[in-house]
Length: 273
Length: 127
Image 1 (cartoon, rainbow over the protein chains, first blue to last red):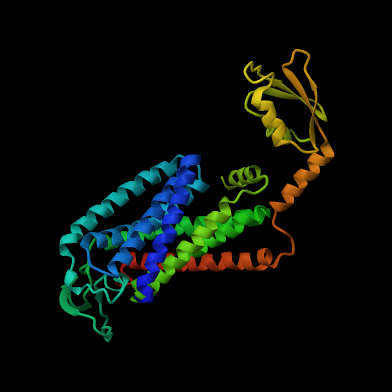
Image 2: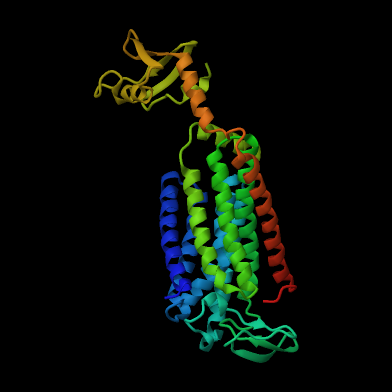
């Protein structure tokens, strides 16, 4: 087994532990932030498991899970959890509604894409992140070794493209930037903002460190996803594992009880509002 | 003494509490026939603050009041010790240099990634 086949299994195990921990916290505290975090982490874990599975064999529905939950939705749900933790306003409920509808719509688009999957290009010798998308080759750009190419008409032009599982112009791929921008803004932005607030008030060092770790973890997966989109998918699994470990440690550090935590946190939240 | 110190000592079974003077708090307890005069609530209260700063000095005449006597200096020093643990230490390289640099760096990277994703949406970045 190669390292890229092992990493998703480790990420899955970490995410499973993390998800159970967060859901336990939700059932004790009934804070919706933990519910959204739990859903996002469950999606993250499902995506990791799908990657692990697809490194051994092909299954179209496992690919469905990988793309929809692993690539498209999980960051947005995680970020929405952070938004709920930071902002206690009614408009957040509207955003929740939009997120649910957007997720269902993305699921619908993914279902539409399923019959069009180009399954013949799939191989277990490469990570699924390197073969899921069909990529147009720019003028002068050469195809990677062993890549299957196709010449087709796209947006009125004849182009040569590296074949991928999802054909050119698959609509579901247009939805991922929306979810990922929202997820990045709220998850990373929220963690950086929280860390800054605690740091500025000179209180709760554990929360400062925790939020830095959460932001770093979220950024590592965001960075790896961007590299994947640029054609360097081999870093995705490492980024995922780093994200899982850093965010889990951050969450545990943040959850560690501190003296006078309630008083300090209420002060911070009040000043944030 | 700050009232906040007292607010957190109310245990289940106590109806209300009044501070009558700086060092003494009177708690109006609910009579519980099954568990003695103050039931498990008093035990909980004393157990929670079972240290040198709190001791029971007197039961009320009708058995429904207790007076709790607080050693203010001890309480305040305990609170100070707790506060020190929940504050960022001064002259810490981690918190003075590394954390601010990390926050700024991560903010810049986040902005870059968002611009990239926006580029994908606008068709500037091919996918």
